[in-house]
Image (cartoon, rainbow, N blue to C red; front, side, top):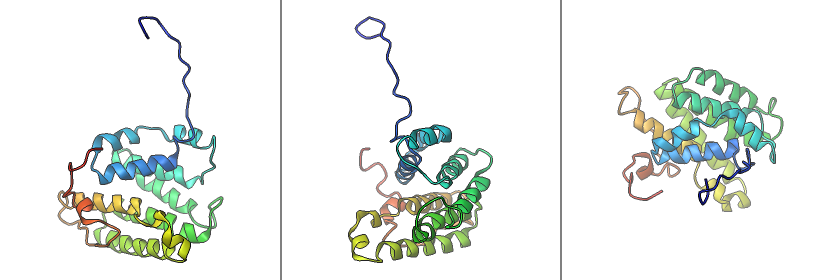
Length: 201
């Protein structure tokens, strides 16, 4: 009802900005902010909807949909997160990816998935080793030439920062799991949530 009169509105349907890439970025930001309600809502958006919406304007590598499915399954305790992340890793290799440079895949895409796999497997030592190595690869990629060094894309590795936040929070519930990696790429006040609630979102 609008102005007490029934109205028939046409829905837009899935739009290009409802994409898997935007969904994962929003998810990482919600995790770093510890906004459980927001990441739970994002986890309810179906992968098929993201695929339909994103591919209207942009073509994505198939691995990203397994990546989204893995994150959603893990965070909502659905079955299959390890299977999904394994599929995402297999499809993110230069030999299997449909497009993208080997450098991008090897230094940014594949490593993030591997670090998450160690986290999902609750392997504290290997997770910390993987996270430290992935941060080095992120730095190497974004400082390899002057243009990349000036780009804001190399300022914060949001996916790895979100994983660090999740690892820090897990350590309070699982004494054998520890976040032992410190880096300028992982702002302490965000990881340790000492600024939690300080800023409106």
